[in-house]
Length: 442
Image (cartoon, rainbow, N blue to C red; front, side, top):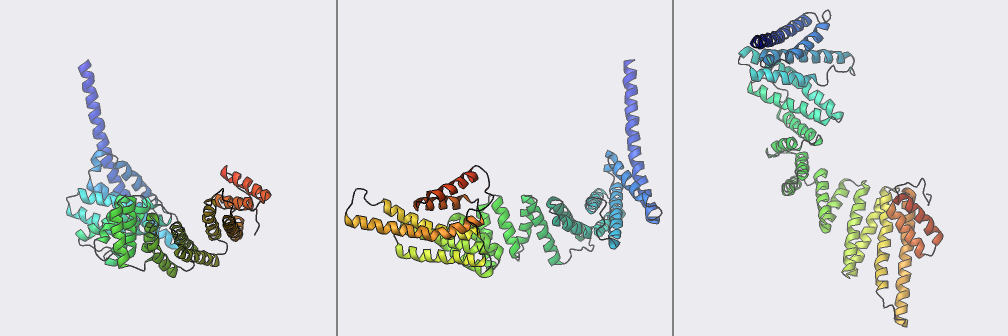
């Protein structure tokens, strides 16, 4: 009895598998017939296209059908036909939605699978023809995905367009990417989409392909530099950036990349010429003036520490000039206002250090005179800083650094009421709150 039971179970399983295989094969054939019916009369047999899609998708879930090149080519033809129907609708209504998320990619993948599986010449020809038909749509849908910031989907579509080009070239068929410039542009946008999708390995591969041609344009150098930097390949990144800057000395993207490198490394002297070049190219970019002012400000403080007052004064003047130019470009730029205030405030702080260094127990006339002189200079510098800090607070009432500076200045001026009011506003910010309005109205 036991043996008979297992024998019967085995027979039933075999029959079930055979029926499933037969069902899958039947579904694939039915899908093909439904597509033929639709093509014969698209208006009268509109429903046949959806029937074809449903049946081919079901058929390709079966293992034996998955190894069938004809079934994959049939899927490609069905999805390609759906896409062509949708595109035809867009001729009359440009905003008409597409049926699938990316039927061009579905069709391409199916055609490629059929191409790889088949050994029959006519099937290979059908798959190649289908890929040629869908190639342009891969690019167009990729652009749509890119513009919608769906970078992963854009990359997959763009990459499929490149793969289709390689296959069409192998088969000596026409490709929309036959023009070398168009082909290089497609590689670039594919690399860029990969970079934005955080597919760094893919991005580096495609950027490198263009870089190795020897005639890569500036955006290629910039893209490859950024990817190598993200991949922690600092030496490789700097090599690419140096080459790019030598080839394209006027390119703003590479120039700003170099500026960032020098900022990170604290190469202040080298920054000056680069920032001046950037200002020449973008004279209304207020952040460039503020950054250049900050470079001179840092150089001023360095020279003051070294007791080189002549050079320090030169740098101070340059810092002030650039901060003022930033204000001219944008009078409501809070960073420029704060930076001007901080320039005088920090100078006062340096003089305060000199004041504190005076002997505390020396009450001689000479020492007291020196004390009063420096004290007067400190308060004068605070007075020069104050209007800029007031304006900065008026533009941004929640900047902690501005509030700290204002509180300190008013405390030194013995205006304890104002200093206390500002301190309360400081505490609000420190606790994560926001001041709803400015203390110093504009």
